[in-house]
Length: 251
Image 1 (cartoon, rainbow, N blue to C red):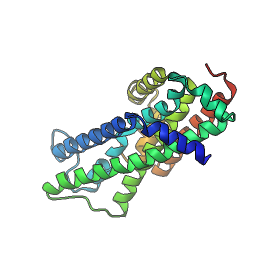
Image 2 (cartoon, rainbow, N blue to C red; image 1 turned 60 degrees about the vertical axis):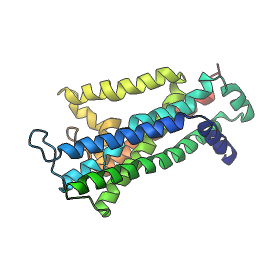
Image 3 (tube, rainbow, N blue to C red; image 1 turned 60 degrees about the horizontal axis):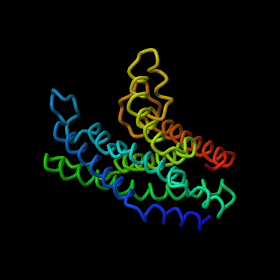
């Protein structure tokens, strides 16, 4: 298993895809933190003022906004085997396909944890500088550290979901487009329609918002419940992806 995990890291770091996704995540989170802080406390924006507990909860959870790029990281990690037609030699080298998928899940979860740590640190540094310039930099107390930690965990889970989704669909473009449509079209529609809004809290987006304290969804779960729900989706995607990878023919 260790050999397979190392092989996955070699595949990941011999290309520049990981660097592009990491830089994209950093830029996205930093930009969001800057704009949020710039308009914090403005009457027209409705955003909480800098220095308030709600502001710190919201701004320190913005790292979770990079979830789509971590989802893509996991998708690419799995689907590149099919896109570049290396799945056959990979599975021949390790005939137990389940071990290959599990190795990918472990490798990309660990890589995502390292990337998420960078994103979380950048998020805090940008906020500390910008909010500090406005006279109220958030401290690294227990509550704020917990908020940062939940964002990190959420990003890792989305990478795991990405690996599972890639194993389910196998087509890289289809999986990425499907993930984007779901996150930016399907979930927002379900959340905004009164008849379906109640179901939103049981979806991955609802679990993410509950876990990271973004308070955007209607009637969200408790933070720990949202975390368990999101983890459940990650494990379900991993299980189904592993099951199908074992049973399907390689093409």
